[in-house]
Length: 106
Image 1: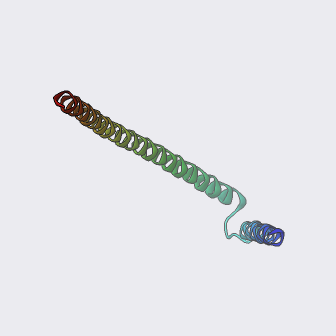
Image 2: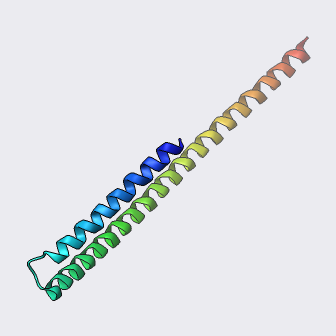
Image 3: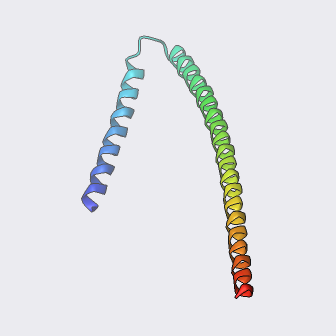
């Protein structure tokens, strides 16, 4: 198990170092000026932030819908259980009454 944790950590570290190295090389050898590159990176960052915010809002709304659906399901099941309990109680009471009547006849 310990070797799996170290292996996963090593893979993640290698991936992160590779990504950082690639980003640094891309910026160094970009055909744009530094200002153009910064402007482009800033715009991409804003787009990504907006997209992330929209996705977060959609996920939150979907979560609310699922919670409402689950709540409705629980309510319906609770009502069904109460109806079954009432029918069972009525059946038990009818059985007791029938037993009393038969006992009185004898």
